[in-house]
Image 1 (cartoon, rainbow, N blue to C red):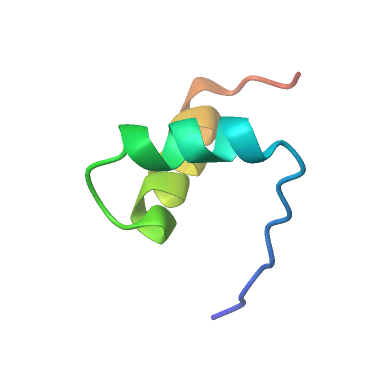
Image 2 (tube, rainbow, N blue to C red; image 1 turned 135 degrees about the vertical axis):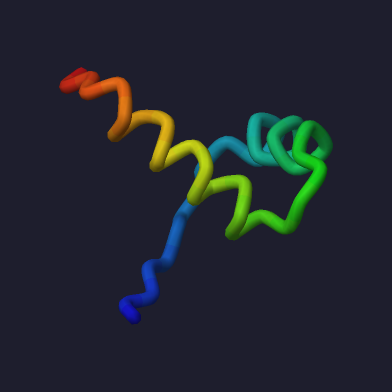
Amino acid sequence: MKKYLLLIEDEKLWEKFKDSIDKDINSALMELVKEKVSKGDKK
């Protein structure tokens, strides 16, 4: 299993994200990654 470091420069945006999730941060980020991959968006 690989581990990645996430750097967030916008602290206000990060606080809003943390307040909006119900699970731990890793699970929430993995859900976002899976959603993006399943849509096939290439932005």
